[in-house]
Length: 310
View 1: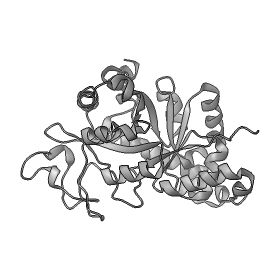
View 2: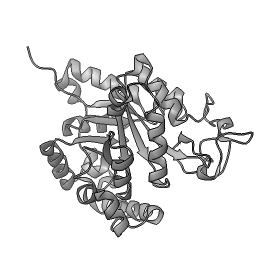
View 3: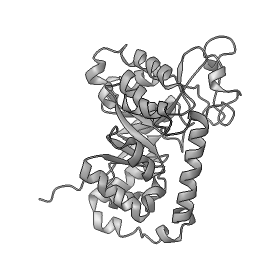
């Protein structure tokens, strides 16, 4: 009997965010109900030291409130605990503690948690607060810590992660194979890459390097079935998607008849999609690095280098 083909895990990008408000408990729970092996979310810290699950540094895009998260309190009459999402069904913003509690329910003990660490954070403060939440749970060292993957965009965060959360696995998040190799290769066992960054010849080389080195390769944010199928051909370990049910249904079909189902999805989009052209990818990578450095400082400052080596 043939050995079943290994297919990528499903990780819900901000939960099942195509159907529920992103980064909410409802979205996380929906992804888990769909059968996702993991959920991905983002963290910021309020002015009164509460770690919350939220993508943007400010509230305006997705909620009925405004203001920078770092300047807003969580508790109190005007606290963010009272904020609701614009998208229906209206939801509260979950805290990191509430999300961890969800993952520690007996029925969710198999679900992994990819924490996207936004560069607006003070890493020492953030990781200390996260440790307090994680270590408050019984058996956290065996039942929780191994399931948490810290995703980092800037090398300055590496040393703080190794110091404050040494028990968590680490990953690079970004769109640059150059940055992944130069700053993160030795300190991360996973690489969470934008789909387009892996479509080039160098992207193929990076995929092969990860396979040889035993690095887990995750790809985001993959919502189109043809791109999902391409990620399968690449042999990635996980597909991060807004449409968890779409990938899980396709994966189930592939498990039933890989050749027949896979043949329905061509590869011509790789050569006809402008944003996958090398000049565009290079400019996008440089733009992203400039953005990150403007917020968290240059990648090559002594402070960043020292932090990464700590």
